[in-house]
Length: 409
Image (cartoon, rainbow, N blue to C red; front, side):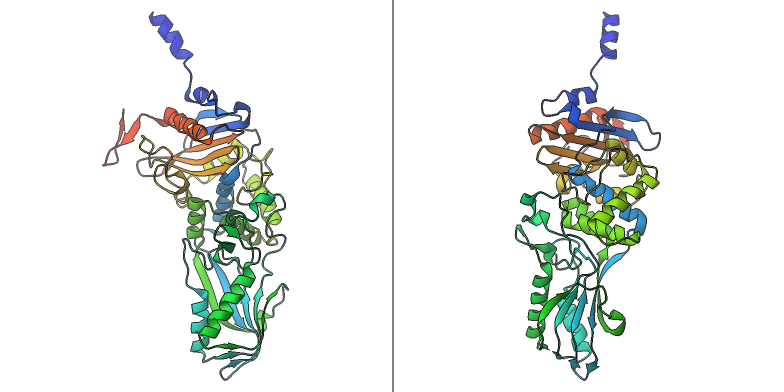
């Protein structure tokens, strides 16, 4: 009897085996890779080099690249100039606003920034200006190329989550649940109305400038509107899975690497960056920064390589929602031994459910990288439950008391 038990134990199904047997999982369209950050030990691996659709775990790639390139403390800038002489209380020319790509400008979510209209009014009043003889104009030359990648599904483009990325973003380029195609026009109307209400007259009209030469070196700077730090923008992006924020961060990465501010340049440069960092890129195709394109392809090895490379970055893991506690992961692993001890970005599209992030220790430091990419899933609730069971099977048995000591159960 003992020998039979021993033999049975040898051939007992692993948590990964049970996961792949789930009726909601397509084994051939699923990839899993879980590794110890310190030792490199692999706890689970399946289809690690198979290219699959990542959905929003693409944001982990975009944010990691920009964080490495620029750090957490940079900010977006929106400059305001008078492009003509200031004589007395009059600007004899136009009020020029130069879009800096800030995705938080006028946004109704964290991180909030000061009202740029109030700042402009305060700056004009400080100089005693009560009239503008020209127009209010916006320079949108920072970014080039289409505001949305051509591969985004037509059905997504009118939705707030599928709005385009512009050099001048305003109110997250959305009105309610619908995308706004021309946020510059909404912004200009808002600024003009606020200035007039403040008693500042505008003789001209409003319009958008697309040229790269606005002559700002010949202008008078009136205002430098600054966003919160990149770190806070990244955290908000991860917690809420904000596509606009992610697309802005990708274009910012392209600019930081000396390329044009387009989605295409950002995606190309991002892939080259990680390839140069020694991350396996075979089979990987990057199209955008958010994961909304169904033409993106990643492998578990690629995502895992980035997670491993970023494992000791103090900010990176903190951007991801805590399981059972925050954002898109608030219901995942809730009231289990792993509640608050897993931090991951989720990715969800029709037929797709993905996770990428870390197992944490009692001090909330990453100990293991986790990648679960499920394409062609059945019922989403069942796929999520299968992923929960997988992680509990791999890591279950450890809970932490209030002093932070680990107890095996």
